[in-house]
Image (tube, rainbow, N blue to C red; front, side, top):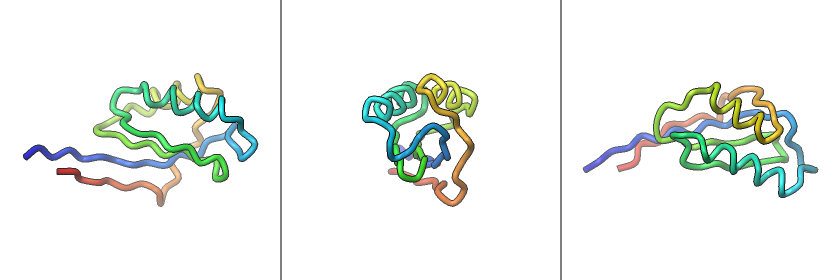
Length: 88
């Protein structure tokens, strides 16, 4: 049996709001999913939040660069929305 530990972290993001167009939302997802170790991305414009699922450690500076490439700024983790999930 192989066990993989996933980590889900929600980030507050400036430049993301309910008025953000679909093209821009897609750009955020597209940039982040390219980061090595990122296996899932969920964008919640109403909360100015992006949740990122990883399957290992991911360098925060690389995430910041991906957010910047999509036209957003990562303000930091949302705190309570962080969870680690073992998968077997």
